[in-house]
Length: 280
Length: 309
Image (cartoon, rainbow over all chains, first blue to last red; front, side):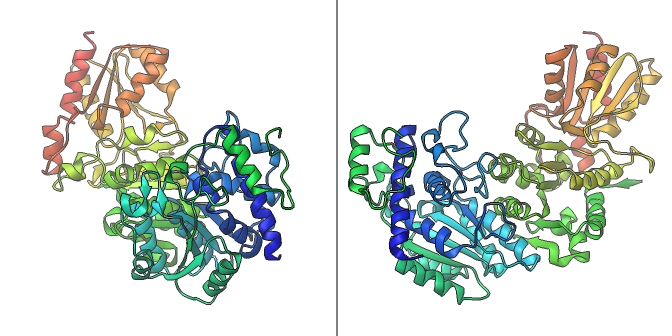
């Protein structure tokens, strides 16, 4: 698939993310929009996943579970879940829970939402595949604020101790968390040196560039015997001018005017949105 | 014969290593004490030490179960149920994953390590979580069977095990029934409902009371959740008075669970023998049981109180 086609998918996902959150009147737009290209690349270029139930599929764990809308959006594009679900996000009886619930929605590989727990889950999956000598690979998406959690570093130790080269973490490094900039809340830098010290192979990438992501994932394939993390620099709220780089858009929904402005900005490039838009 | 329930756990794991290729075992640097080392000896490739990291212990077990394995994760009860509570709640129980948490060194009988290591709240923590099965075996035979049955059951299970050797309650003919309480002695004057090593004390109390002309029913509730409601209600109806006994805080443990059933269905006077909203301390297990009144004599005393009500 060409980059231009991936861009069309990404744009459709952005609109669906905003529509879901606008209709729900709550949710996390900032960290969903920052991860769009990463998710598109994973689900369309990197992972082997023809269906959400195929035993041979690669596994994806959304460790930053509040990014649920970006996961739902990519599952919709893949056709694993229906776009009719868009207006149901966070509503009662919905399959689209505020944070991903694997019991309610096919395609969700693990229930997440409480930060710091997804990397351990991914480790467990990767250990099992190694034990069974299966080729399945495991991918986990972490938030940069999320790595404040101590459990992430317990998991980081384990992944290198057990040489989990079938595990790849991607860090959605948008630089912001709820209370502000990473460095003002809790210093996480130097992230690369920390993971290197924990025995990981570290790759840096531009998280909104498919070309850069491709280079990073291709480099990962050449590394044997250790886990790898792709630190993807991203922009929180990417694609929506007034949300970009604003910590205040971590966890609030746009009002009608803001929603319309955002949808207009995203334009109509090969629009595949169904059930989206104000009247969807 | 006296044997610790954790010893039985190690033996059960060895059997499972041979009988079920999907079983994997995880420990957090306590494998010699929790007895998971027994599994490692026979099946090292399916044993994972995660280091001193109990949150990761449970999270990794969750991931293994998602890829089709049946993980048994072990540490001391303080760290397994306490330190890792929220991971058990959100990552294991919320999606009802097939993870078994076998927590050893529960209760005061940890002994010399003292209050920091004596989990007297774990049953309370675990039974409040939806989807969770909670088991506290009374002796080594019951422990072994509970572990084997837990491996067959699909879903999260918490098994509470002890450090100290405990006398046998059962003979080889005993068959552990999932979720069923066990009537060990019949009686019409009072019911003593116990779990774990307090079952032995309840049996001794039964003998003391018999000599004084009081006939006490003795029931072992090895499965605190789901609890055997029918057995508890029928005991309440027959004897009109109950004493519960547990090596656990009287807040949220077996006594509370029995009270919940009775309050819903058939309230009768009830007294609780257990740890009275306090922390433990260092000491020999037997001395601690004596000091904190987890004894047959205390059960007898409470029986005499409750039948007056």
